[in-house]
Image (cartoon, rainbow, N blue to C red; front, side, top):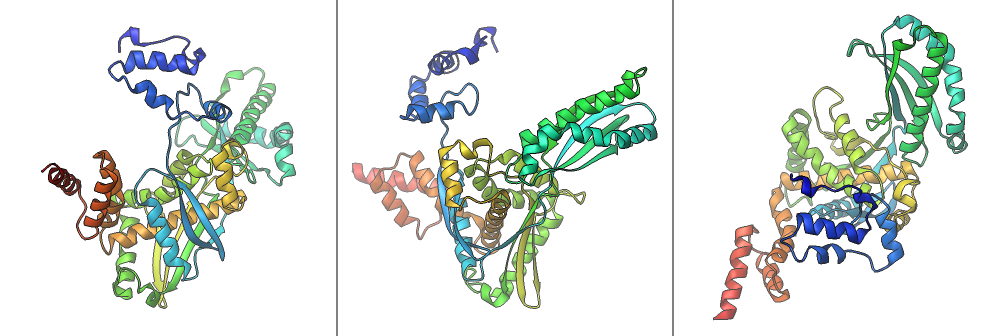
Length: 442
């Protein structure tokens, strides 16, 4: 890159000045660039400023469709679940699965744990037993130093639930941790946890130096940070019914359907290549609701995939069985979520979406989102083992292809009618629209 394309003090420019520099430097051949960026600005200047201040160097808004998947029955309560996602067929698949299970008892969900984790990582080259003795002697002081940070959380029933010293020198020379577990109630808790960890690191280093005034170099703090791997913060969701009640699964014999479905899930349990795509489908549903409720889908993704590898090989997050004639399909997944803090009280749509869900607590939101993932996976595996995934997906993708071809309303109507009985593909859509346009010019 040419040095002439770099800039100093970019963050101090106004939004309009940022766009002028950006379009002149990197989009000089696109006369529509400025218009495209500005057309997504909100006319409400106060609302636009709110969005501008979510991140740094904002130049526009990037829209994702917000859809609704209705007819979810979760623990005998009805929900319409908001989903923010761009991928065709995700909302439709979730809705279809919800409707399928609504008449079969719906989804059952429960929380298996809400524990969060953070660590102070440090190196120490001295005697391990002496370090352990020092930690035990100073543990009460370390916890007392954290009181100003934990007082408010403790009033809400949360706080630090354990503090341990972990010797990791077998994995990495001189490597140790202070391993801390937290309960953060309805907050995701990242800022709370990281503030506690940084205070803990400061106190631990101080106590060590006071005890070893002549040997200060033995202990060195590397970093203090929460973990997005939360195997103690788990939501479980499941569906079940007699195998005979699966009879509506695309007209296939219910025994055959159940057997194929279970075999497909079993394959994802033992074959990592399949498991990754299997779990990606689960995350289609989960990420869409996580995003719609103002939570961190990157953290959820990282934690879920780590959990899928917890037994040493990457495997399915869902499981299925038939026992005594009962089909059962379930998921257990780590979900560190919040319903207070972050965007949950700032973004107007996030607030509305949470209200739509009945203003759930964090554990209740965990249950809802686990259900969304299970529903998505049920829809995907059902399609894969019956009609094939492309039939439904390409029909949903049809409108995107028509928009790419700038189809008129009349052309769209003709295409929708035609592809009710014909297979959808890019070439087929292109061919149909071309033939329509040729006939109009004759």
